[in-house]
Image (cartoon, rainbow, N blue to C red):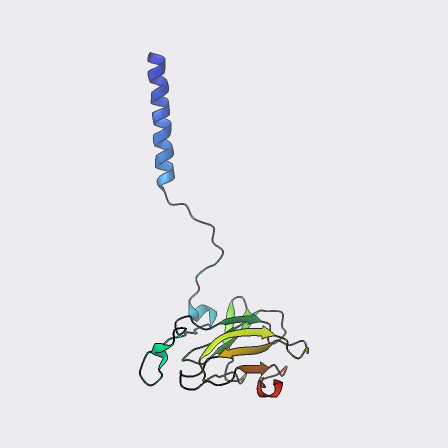
Length: 166
C-alpha cells in the first residue's frame, strides 16, 4: 500500500510539473516579420470612401480590394511590388534590397485614375522585361473604361498600350 501511495505521489508530482511547464507561452516559428512602412518604404493604402458622387457604395465588389503583382520590373534580380488601387492610384515599389523599397509610380508613368480591381504581371511582348496588365472597373459605376496594359520600356516610363493590342 505504501508503495502504491509513493507511486501515485510521483505521478501527481510529474503531472503538476508538466502542467506548469506547458502553461508558459511558447514562441512560434514565424515566416513573416512585421515591418513599419518607414523601414520598408511601402506605404500603400487602398482606402475606400463611400459617397454619393462616386456611387461606389453600391459596388458589390468594392470591398474585395485591388490586386498585388510581383515582378522584376528593372531586371536587377530583386522582386518588385505593384499594388492596384480602387479610389487611389496604383503604385509600383522597386526593391532596393534588404526589404527596402522605393515608390517610383510617377516616374514610371503608372499613375492610375480608374477603379483597378486586379493586376497580372507578364512579359507580353517577349522582350525579357515584365509588363503590367490592370483589370479596371472604372472610377465609378457610371463610367466603364477599358483595362490598362503598361509596356515596360526598359527605362522609365512604362507606355500604356491597351488600345494598341486590340
